Amino acid sequence: MILPRFVLLAMLLMAGATHASSVTFSESATLTSDYRFRGLSRSDGDPAVQGSIEASHVSGFYAGLWASSVSGAQLAGAGAELDGYAGYRGQRGQLGYDIGAQYYTYPGAATGSRLVQAEIYGSASMTLPKVSTNVRVGAALAPQQGRMARANLYGYGELMQPVPTTAITLRAHLGYTRSSGVEGATATQLSAANYLDYTVGADYVWHRVTANLSYIGTDISADRASAYPFVPGGLRASSKGKVMISLTAHF
Image (cartoon, rainbow, N blue to C red; front, top):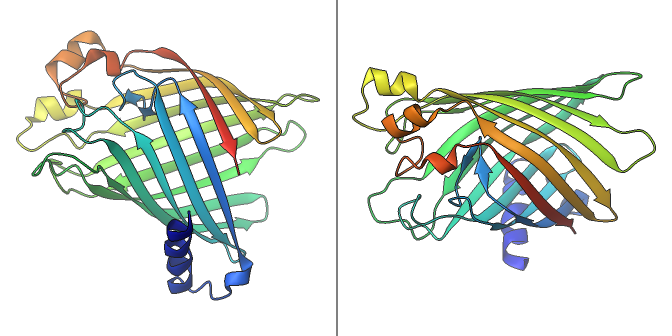
């Protein structure tokens, strides 16, 4: 982890977080029964191994690397997904906010696949008094690039509710994708590619390990899945609802 830490520290220094002694690192490793990205599987329904490292400065600046195993059949032969991100988190009274940019790469993907892309993101959150419910809304925009026919927009809302006197937190997520489509897509295909994704589930925390049980699904019907390739190959299984489990260790 020495090289990734050095790279992230350098990114923070360039961003103006000049005191290295004020930087903290956090790392995690995850085993999940399926890797779902905005409701769609990127591991073809198979288990995935994931890991992350993040450097954060007391000023609010942060930078990180995130990786996951993926399905080469879905992602042009790629053996993994490796994402880099950087941003700024802050607090204004009861309102928390987070803005940044993320860069998605797929090592091992076939030459010319042009899967690499970047997006900017932002979110705002607030914990409601008395009930302790955390509410978050956010969006991510990926400008037209690579094989994308147009800009891709994703918006979402989330609720997190701790269960009193337990180590359990209930979660709910609803997202909407205005799909970029792919080059050469018709107006009908672009319209059909817009979809909702949803998640309901719960976390259980034990020491530094978080166990999650969730149901993740989309509103993509079998007809829509076969009419347009929401994922490479148009695999229906990638968009069907599914119960998932994961274990994450934090270091």
